[in-house]
Image 1 (cartoon, rainbow, N blue to C red):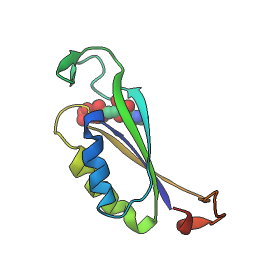
Image 2 (cartoon, helix red, strand yellow):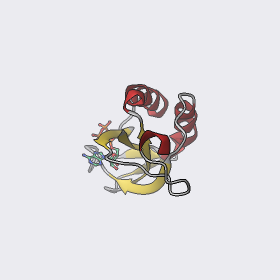
Image 3 (tube, protein in one colour):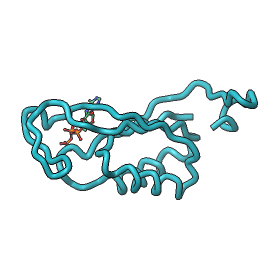
Length: 112
Ligand SMILES: Nc1ncnc2c1ncn2[C@@H]1O[C@H](COP(=O)(O)OP(=O)(O)OP(=O)(O)O)[C@@H](O)[C@H]1O
């Protein structure tokens, strides 16, 4: 299992969620965050306004998925979150040691 963490532009959430549910991803955590990438010190458009501040509003999506779904998830995520403009975001993939569904006590992939 892997944890996919994606930082995306907030207005892309619906498109990204749709693109991921198409491939059967059943759970996701979304957090409002602020961040910066290489554009630090430069301007980025957010809801029509130009920001010159360092930290811009982003969404962090977290999904634990089976290993065999990782590549397809990244592909769909990239396609849906892409605008081609600065600040489109990042995807990080990290190993997940264990997952447990609290209600049933299921472990591993069946808990995803
Ligand atoms: N190295 C990093 N570690 C953690 N979070 C990061 C990192 N780089 C970027 N982020 C997060 O991703 C968001 C979007 O980054 P961004 O797309 O601007 O990266 P970039 O490397 O500058 O790429 P681009 O040139 O396309 O803008 C940032 O606001 C920040 O929240």
